Length: 115
Image 1 (cartoon, helix red, strand yellow):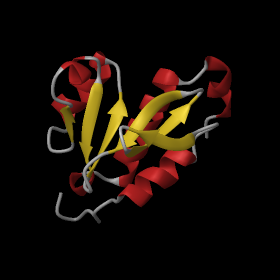
Image 2: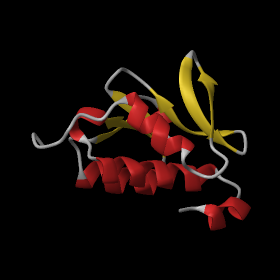
Image 3: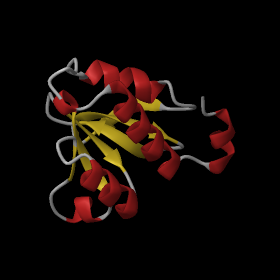
Image 4: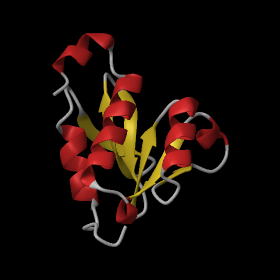
């Protein structure tokens, strides 16, 4: 995907905080994004983010775009936590992954407020 502009943590932050009732906090010393007190994404290494997917979503995205998505190592990955490589990701894919992660933890009453 050499035609992509490399996405940054600022892109993740802007999109995540654009989701209804999303807030930035800290998780294990790294920035995270929450809705209803639950984490749906974190900022990882400088070129990564992590999103909270369900295992079926994780399997689908890893199969479809293995250069972008990979399970987090260990038990967290088995629960759906998925690493997203920003250098290999486009804005639409990032927005879709954050939206999925947000929906996985957001109270249903907030879903109607999605853009």
